[in-house]
Amino acid sequence: MTRIAQIALAVGVMFVLTPSTTFAHGEGTRSVPAAGADLRNAPEEVRVALTERPARDARIQILDGCGEEVSQSPSVVGDEIVAPVVDGAPGRWTVTWAAISSLDGHNTRGSFAFRVVGEADCPAGADASEAAAPVVTAPAETAQEPRSSFPLVAVSAGVLGLVAMAAAIRFTGAP
Image 1 (cartoon, rainbow, N blue to C red):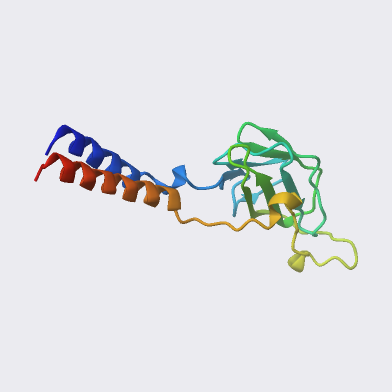
Image 2: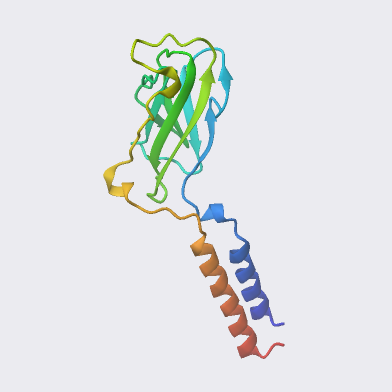
């Protein structure tokens, strides 16, 4: 195999084997408190880390055990959305977030829940076990954008690399 064919093969294999996260859109990677955690006290803040730095207009909604919103204005710190929390009622807390990647402009969103231990003393009419589902929307310009987890760019580049390898072998006469 000639030197050109070897290079073309290496490039093709590199693109085919490149992890799909390289070409994926931003996703949530971790949170504080962690999803499913049981806490003794309400947290002072909630953090959601993303694979790509979110734009400054990231949104987050935190509902306490009575379904009341307890989040204050969020900020973006590095790759995290950070929201201070005012005291909230014990029970199942839900966090819903939405952000636009500052790298590629794609919309990403997610949600998780954790529990603050204790008896919820909810106001009359509030049902702690079935609090209304939180709704957080992304800015309108990207809200309709379809998402795909299929690494189309990686596959296309890999196919192109393999075609280049075949052409190099064909034109150099290497077996």
